[in-house]
Structure formats: C-alpha cells, structure tokens
Image 1 (cartoon, rainbow, N blue to C red):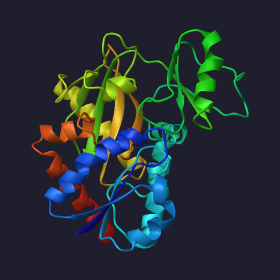
Image 2 (spheres, helix red, strand yellow; image 1 turned 90 degrees about the horizontal axis):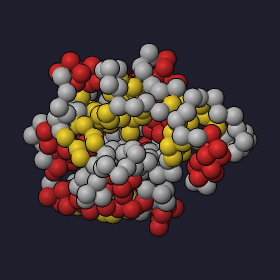
Image 3 (cartoon, rainbow, N blue to C red; image 1 turned 180 degrees about the vertical axis):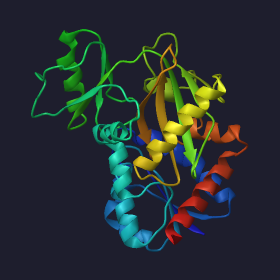
Image 4 (cartoon, rainbow, N blue to C red; image 1 turned 90 degrees about the vertical axis):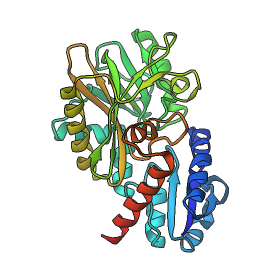
Length: 304
C-alpha cells in the first residue's frame, strides 16, 4: 500500500512530531508499505495532489495543523483514508474550553476553568482560587503552561500563552496522581501512572520527552475499581467528542479517590517514550502491531 506519512508541521510541537515519525516510518516499511514522507510546513500547497495518489495517510502531527482537523478535512476532500478522528471531532478535542463544555454536559468531572482571550488581555480577572494552571487553549506537550501560585504572577502567565496562542485556559489546580487512559478501537487500554521527577512541579515538556523524565508505570498500580471507573469515563469522553480509531485522555486522581478528566488527545504521541505505545505494549501489541491496527481501523472507518 502507498502510505503518505504526514509529520512536522509548524506548531511548537514540530520536533516531537518529527521524532515520532521516524519510528512510524520504520514500522510502515516493516509492514511492507511504500512510504512517502510529507511535511506540511515545507510543501502545504501540494497536499491535496499528493493525497490523491496515496491509499492511506498516517498523520503524526501535534497542535496546528493536524490536531485541529485541517489536515483531516483536506484528506477527506482527496478521498484518502487516515487513522483517528475526523475534522470536526479533532477540532473539538484540541480546543480545551470547547471539550470541557462537552465533558460537563456529559457529567464528566473536569477541573473548574475559565477562558481568557486577548480581548480581556493580561488584566483579566482571575475567577478561580489559587493555585491555577494557565495553558494555551489549543496545544499540547505542556508547552507554554505555568503553575500560578500568587495573583501577581497571573498576568505574566497570560503573556506567555498569548505569545503562542490566541486564548488561555485557566484551570483549577487539583492535587493528586496523574493517570492516562488510551482507547484503541472502542476498547480502553490499561492505565498508565505518571510520576514527575522530584525537581518538577508538574508533568512538563522535559518530563514527557527527556530520557530521564517522569516515571511511567503501566499497568498503573491502582485498584481494579479505579481502573474500570477511569476507563468508563474515557469511553464516555471519546464517544461524546465523536472520536474514532483511538485517543488518549489525561486524568488526575485525588488522594480521596476522586477523578478529574483534564483533556483528550486525538493524535497521541508516538515517540519511544510516549504513553499510548506503552499501554498498547501492555496488552501484547508491539509498536508495529499498533501501527497496523491503527491503519486497519482507519480503513474500516473509510468503508462505513
């Protein structure tokens, strides 16, 4: 099969995308596919033409474009199948404020939040109790995120976000253990527990991608009832956002056992240290097996 591997892009997560693409490229060739690498940042105007020559597109983009649904919309116009969510669902999931509205509508626990736009500016009123996280409303890998403990630091945290994104999500800080849950097909994967390095306040970029980053344990050492509850919430979130194929959700579990859904990723990281491949390995899927399964799901979705 002729596969175009779409990676790179122009978001702040470009290097993460390219890193994951190397291993995906190897897996696609191991599966016997002919692979054409395509970077939208280098040749965007030819995407529609190239997509029409391919039998499948494997997307490994983070942020915009890719997770915002733009690439998926173009591939749909070309009639080229791909793995994961479609354009509309991708956009909803990437926009943290929009997805939180949907979570709340489905009675899913999510930390209290407010959206701050440049119209409100750095003098926006903080409506939540401190401490809070301030993060780009669209983006990932914890880039641009700050943990604000004092009100005087709030404007600077907003400035940091506005330098890279048009709006800021301000989110109540929930102390606890971070757990992630992936969905493959329509079935939840084993949970992964994340413990940041001792010198880190939260699961930041270095914890996610450095070789000596956070400790990640899969399956997570939690009670079976905890696993089942989080998997059920993740399945509900996946369905509520209209996602297909796969996704991964980030949760916080408080010391008293309450769960909060933070966000859902439609194109989970595929680097050697990424969480979804680790969870897939826990059920016996090698990285190459995972790529094959994602392609199978993508092709099945095209036929529906």
